[in-house]
Image (tube, rainbow, N blue to C red):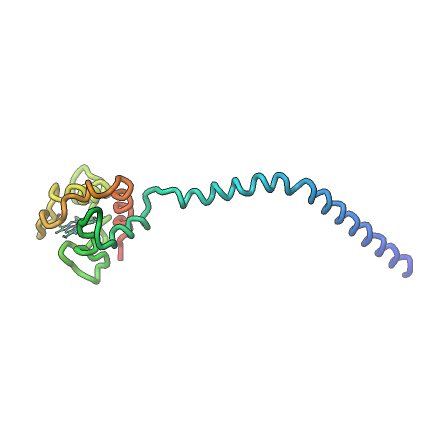
Length: 158
Ligand code: HEC
């Protein structure tokens, strides 16, 4: 009994010693590479969302802004995006991603939506006047902003 206790104590002490040793070694060697690599990784992972690029979120922000560019009406002034809201001064855009694919032979859904934004008179939605939609969005927005709007409109399904 006594010797077992002593043995346990000895093992415990050796274990402690090892931990201290490892800790000391680790403490000396580990921080150096960690300090140089950690910030680099963080900068990269933060750069992705910060770096601008087309996104549906950006598209939503543009769509819902009251004014686009120098003073052109924002999209939300004429288009509702939930089916339950019905039409406004322009057709409801819920489900436009699916309809867009069927509008013009040869144009993908994304291509049709893009065309609808930069060249609204190229295709007239039945029952609506194409001339009612501002025709200068292509000049008022960057390529990235237009792409973001397309990405956002493709998400409308409610
Ligand atoms: C002053 C009202 C008005 C504003 C502002 C407006 N639109 Fe329109 N939009 C219309 C009308 C009217 C039509 C239907 C006639 C046509 O084919 O152009 C239409 C058609 C569309 C279509 C085609 C819909 C379909 O079913 O094929 C899309 C997509 C669209 N608009 C997106 C936008 C976006 C994005 C914006 C903002 C950048 C915008 N509109 C701003 C009035 C507007």
